[in-house]
Amino acid sequence: MITIHKMTVKSFLPVFFISILFFVLILELVDMFSNLWRYYNNDVTVLQMLKISLLYLPKCIFYSVPIALLFSIAFALGTMYANNELIAVLGAGISFYQLILPLILIGILLSGFQFWFENSVVIPTYKEKEKLYNTLVNKNVSYDNKNVTVISDNNRAIYRAGYYNNRRKTLTDVMIVIKDERGNFKRRIDAAWAEWNGKYWILHNARIFSWDSSHKELIEEDRSDYSDNSINKKPDAFKEITRKVEEMNFNDATEWIKTLKKAGLPYREALTNYYKKIAFSLTPLIVVLLSSVIGSSFKKNILLMSLISALSLTVVYYGTQMFTSVLAKNGYIPPLMGAWAPFIIFFSGSVFLFRYTKT
Image (cartoon, rainbow, N blue to C red; front, side):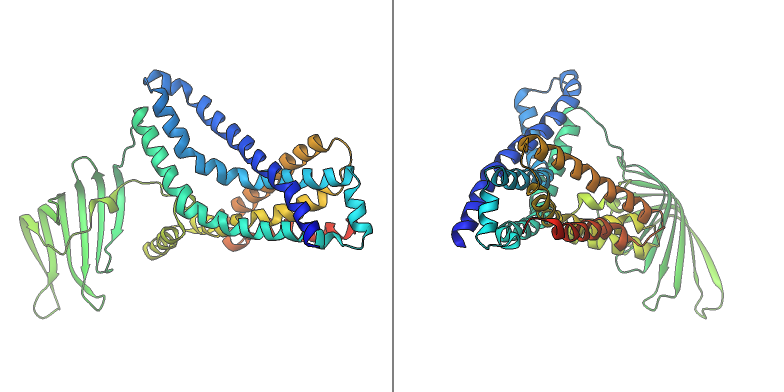
């Protein structure tokens, strides 16, 4: 049995690594040529372009693993079938499930690797790639924001500003509501504008509303300048940033969703993408099961049929994932179902198709 497993793995691994190189090359070339005119217009050197491609490499590998796995397994099993090796193995009393057991184990290991690789390598290198790209092509990103509301870390201060200027680190049309340790109203500060001094906000043309000593009436005080070192929410919190869960590591994504929920902001899309990060990491396992069924059916035109089936199933899988994600983001199905439905559908389908494989 060990000999059979070694034969299966040896016939699969070379094709798998070559396939990864092939699909990575395609992704790199697509990214390179789609931005070539920007590189030319901004006098980006060849070395700088190569550095961008190098930073993009982990993401290309991440996307290439599932489709390369599907193609290589289908090709390896198809080759065994064409050479009558599969018939000999099954005729010797070894079941098809026993034959592909090492491939299933590889799929499980790759699933764990994909989850770790995305969080530890893909996300930070892709951020660096985007940062370097924006710098080299002079693509300016504005972080100014309008109609922004922010809650302090201790939940005792609520900031609302009509406009935030990131370059000057100023807020315009400011209202700050401060609560006591019990969550009750303590005071409210309205200001024409505020500036960050490096440690806290200085409010200009401020009106301060607070309780009198009896806590029965509100008193009003006008101040040309007002500062309180407890009003210290950092300017980064007011930036206009389109934060995407798919571009965060797992821990940051968890905290971001908590922040959205706490602030009362829409979070269905973020939560759906959060669950997708886990579900997508299990794609190699689905791929192993599907490719094992498909590969054992090819006897002619193995290379062509393996490539077509790999591309076709990839398109269908990602298309299904996009469809269920849209349904979840628009509230038609729960976020958990939107993220996990493709995995459940394809896993169930692969288990069903195993009934018709040669055993």
